[in-house]
Length: 68
Image (cartoon, rainbow, N blue to C red; front, side, top):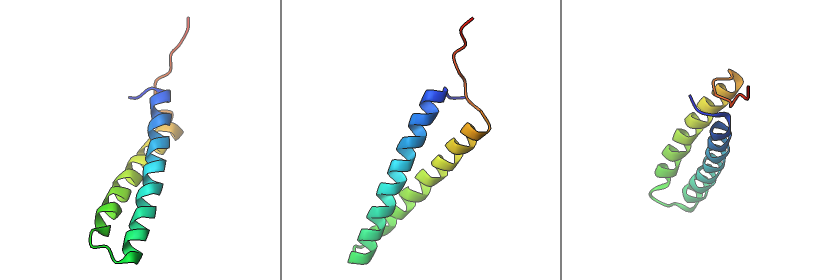
């Protein structure tokens, strides 16, 4: 179980990496580059990671520091 801060940071980076890889996939696909599929696979992997992180935030599956 991750802390809330790490979960938010991981979610933001996953979203940025999904955007970058989808954009790169589109540019390489339309320009006729041979290895466009690598960015497609990476985008799919980061999208799965993003979905898992969002589900953890919604289900409140994280730790917070409690002050007593």
